[in-house]
Length: 306
Image 1 (spheres, rainbow, N blue to C red):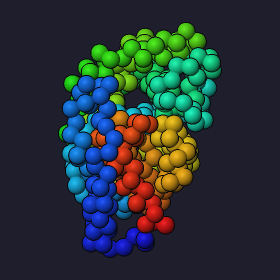
Image 2: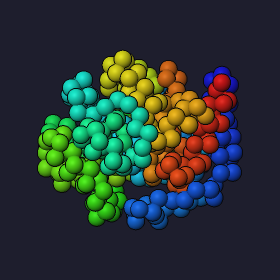
Image 3: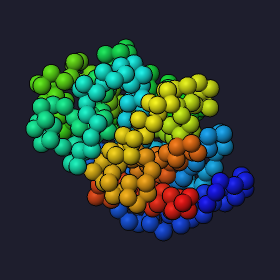
């Protein structure tokens, strides 16, 4: 399907919304974070932001939800802006093939996480930002507001507190990495900043607009500035393609073929380089922690784009 006039684009997005709702009722809401367990499983939204700044949305696309691991894309972008290629001395670039919170692989590889999108990798990336900024979570909230154009974007304190109270496994990973010399700051400081970033509340529209720089060679039309160089945007998209969907990245690449990042809040952000970004959201997840309905919506979108 070629990109056509605005009315046809809006009708297309609404058509995907209607068809994706056939997957509601499949999967289950994340319950290991109590604040997420209360989400209504029958919600669905989708928003698309083109590189010329047009936004097309349907369903619950303007409802805020906990972006969770989608925040790892913000973390990686900001850390690369400050530290550049030095970041890769402490975190890898390869798919993990293991659950996103695996300790086994981390110990076998002496505390160097496989990539920045599994939990251990994102904790190392956050450690860089704790070194660089006095209040990294506040800084990231401000960046999310500027890139999305939504001044109401907030860190959800209830979600943050819930994650903090259930931090044991992430703390185990962080202390293991610190034992190998791969965490520079106090573990609690790093974990608090990491959870705060995961607890950002944003909508599909917010996320599609905020991450449009990845489709537009690093340029954010909303912020009116170059966020990263074009080559770096391409490289971030490459990591999203290989590692953005937890250990289901290969299957998603086969079925959808787009760089993407999911979160256990039910959102999936995807990039069509040179054209647009899209975010779909529905809270019920499959066994890999990815939204069932949102994956189906992106599969429909990719098929019809050809």
